Image 1 (cartoon, helix red, strand yellow):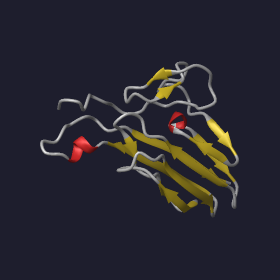
Image 2 (cartoon, one colour):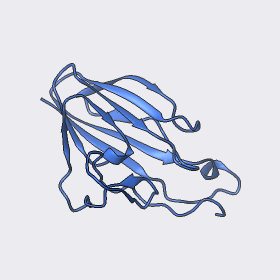
Image 3 (cartoon, rainbow, N blue to C red):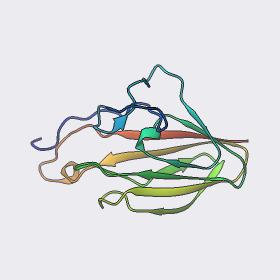
Image 4 (cartoon, rainbow, N blue to C red):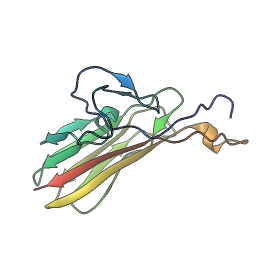
Length: 145
């Protein structure tokens, strides 16, 4: 496990809040937002980052949202994916195993909900011997009205 470091789940954060702290996965998040706080809500088209983990985005049909999750240290994010029928992925680039930001754009297609999710990854998880750090997970809820 040398060089891999222990990690935990990304804690909820809002990209627009002031200040900065480090979540258990080493990604900056605001100190004033904790897992017991209500999820922040963004309205309309948005550019999402790692700091937006745990937020809800409200869109209307035809609006889009782009997630761009930057690699940090030895960790890179997989390209975000959507579950649910309210949005459709229209493009993606980068992400693990590259060190390029994991980027995906989603367009609102019909009223309902969807979840955007991604996990981070590192080469030592796939090596021999395998290291066993915890992977971080990023999640944003989408509500299309």
